[in-house]
Image 1 (tube, each protein chain N blue to C red):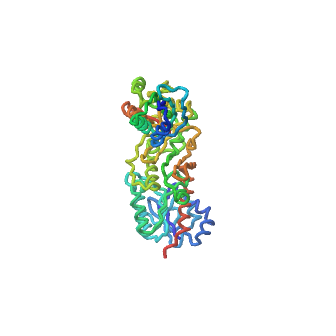
Image 2: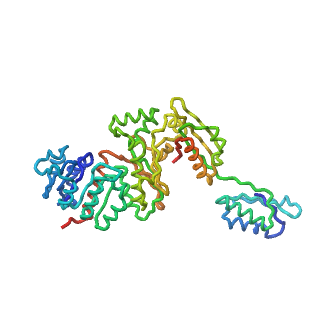
Length: 333
Length: 152
């Protein structure tokens, strides 16, 4: 099958590096696997016979590749012209209108191209539309990397909980806030100092509101509700309180009563992101920048998954989605 | 509860009927035959009802059947819950509002360095009224522009 990677940022680059190191496994499943195109904001690389994966994985900028680079051309052209079988959409998240990812995914699905994405924006804005579009065009649409990074929550539910009804999902869905709250819990520091350290370590943007005001976690709540509980939820449906006002005293009071304060996203009848008291012996009580998901179903009861929610580990989820498609789908003739 | 049953055969069985109908699980029955008085025998029962409403309906049925209830006492299953509020909180007002009928077991306030006080409330509340307590605390938090941190 022919793969195109739209977006050559952190995920795009690291995905291609992972593909290089796992090429034996991938070619074992699909001997014809090729990366035929990669795009960034400024242009794209395209070679219908397949790009040199070794060379690609050593590059930080696409134009370093040489001849196959179409400077100034848009990703959308790559999607239209490449006749790819699978697209990985890895442009940055934009939760206002989902763009440019939304247009990329729509265009790919309309052309019968299977889609794998780690980009939350299009799913927060138009989940139902995209899922229906995928079904109409008989396309796979996978997005494991959008929620809790490397934790395989959608695959788990799809493959292993096929007869279960999900009653509730709650979890630590943002690693940065968990890092900050863990710092406050263990070291008694203030929110401001813990935030500064998170910024210095590159865990959060200069404007940290996306993390600390619960916006990122709320996006994940929306995706979980729509993908796993059949809702048609929007971002505004999530009641949201961030962690800016958590004081060291509040953390200390919690700790004395054997609780930690964690920013928890909850999906049941109600959609919520709010700081909660988590008993220290509860499986969700994980620290550092870990994520955790606690799933309650009618048959399995309670399940907890713990892992890394952002960073290089997310590539595991994206690559698994790609491999799953290689396994079940035939290339287009 | 303690019932006064006429000292005739079949009276206990008759009294148990409304209990069974309302889902009552009988924990113990003490038939105090050694304490009859004017043709009545006191029978003390400990029954576990699924809800308060079932208990009320049982009591009403017994009264309708002419069975005398000498004593009845409700013991609600209670659970502990912990909350933290961060903000400018009027603790006295909060206690006086009786917060959803909860019993406050412990209250700790801490505000040495921050602008905002942090208050931890450890309460005991009947299982049935935990939602009401949560609503009440949310209302207080909204009014005072405080942050409510409830348990998971």
